[in-house]
Image (tube, rainbow, N blue to C red; front, top):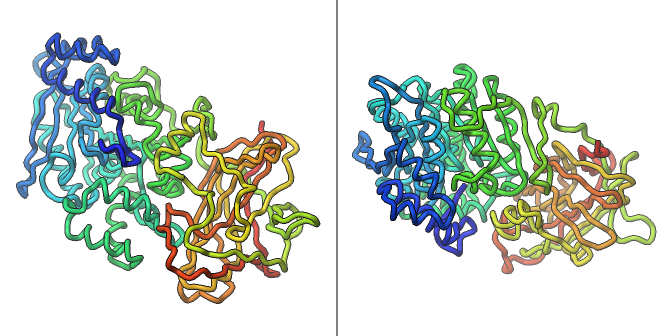
Length: 564
């Protein structure tokens, strides 16, 4: 989760949320009746009265070897017997202006489970000094020093240490565990595993998400190395230095260390995650050989775990308590044994709860739908099973602004609305067919599910260099003209491919979506989405031809099957 206290950011916490965290902090530092009583307006007073009896909370400063000071907090159980030790959980902060205080709502639950809790803000973040390195080698070294400090504290069992983190904290936790085997279990929500794939998908920058994250970091607090990478990404100079920077911060490159140590790893992500690569998380999970669990939910980055960070029920944090209890011996969870599988929700039903042994068991077989020309009397192209369709061309104009179909009209907030049962509505009849090519199936004869991996092959002839296409798969109700997004993917062609017919084959984001009887699958191929590139009205309008040559006919592979 990436959050900030300013209302203009898509990651914003509400004023009430910030007030609640502030009141929790005051009650932890001063468990007087007045301070605890202030929590009664949120129904939390009883919980923190109990905490005052069983836990002792303090704010501490951790000085690293180079003099950098990390802002941190420590919660230790009271009334321990002489020599009694406890499991410990370390919480590196998410990317948030309040740093480790984002976890204040979890402290009581960990404490009730008998844990020592150490939460800290990574260097350069919130009240910690130093520069931001984006979970680089220096941050990993800091995590080891944090553990060195922790094991010197009374009551800490050095053989029972786990790391929990959300977003930035998840990446920090994974990378730290790869280097320090004192970390016996990891739980990461809204995690990343391949930073390069998150920044640069199918040769396309995730520019809007990148700029939002840079804004949260604050460029003035970033290291010189990171500031140079920021400028290169903005200039679309994706060279070896950018790759090296991202590779050093990608947990996928430490698979051998995780597998050799059999590190228990719990990961969570979201179907419409706009910050980090979902396919990369799924691939990483599939390649782990130790104890592992993957949770994929409705929504976007950080949506699902946010209530849990405030101490409310939420699948990601509830699973994290259970995970740590099983591997470290605490009692913060519900007492049940965790399941080592793939757990998911289907869009947009947050009450759904599906379990499968692995991603291979979870994903349904693909069916091939060929992109075909329009049927007689129709204007839109077709998605048809059977014989491949060759010889047609659809020409669209690239204007630098695109249509109203977008991956996420609002970062984070669109996904949050999905979790509330209010997915964004698109009226596909309003799509300018001069700016996008549209293909559709016939109405479904029965309710059907899209579950698993998707792949698009299409031949494109752009008239200008660095042209981008964005493919969206929609659930369209022909009776109302309303549609919801299922999945998407961008693809950018190189300067050398300008003026040439180039066949591109690329995956769309995986999905789990149930379509009602009578609905259609609708594929929209557009030329712009602000998630990937900034609007550009100064570039001359040019044509992109979408074709299907014989021998490389265009298709969309979809794991579409009747609902069980």
